[in-house]
Length: 138
Image (cartoon, rainbow, N blue to C red):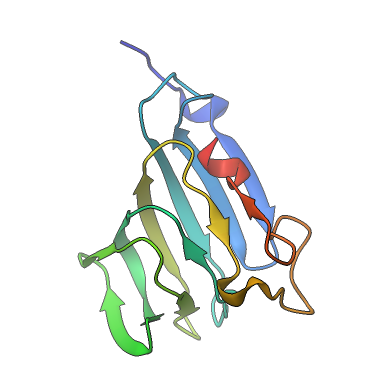
């Protein structure tokens, strides 16, 4: 059994919000990665995909999730199971943003669908056809 104290949680700030690792293989020795997303109001996340299923649960605020060409409105209490290999983009409520908890298998890689990077991608985003494990999921 492992306890990851709040003060020991890994916090990574991106242009879109704060990712807080709650447990992962390198934090608490967990067999899955679990992190919190605090998205800024009006945030428009990058178009991306994962090579594994992710489960998102919204705790506060609201978002529009564009998944595989469809749009879904979600809010506090809603959960989405996002399949592997499907393009997605998160758009936060313009006034409230959102807070979510995300669970993923260890080693889940994020990548750019079609291998094309957004010109304004942050330093943590995969470049070109690169596949990376996000630092909050390691």
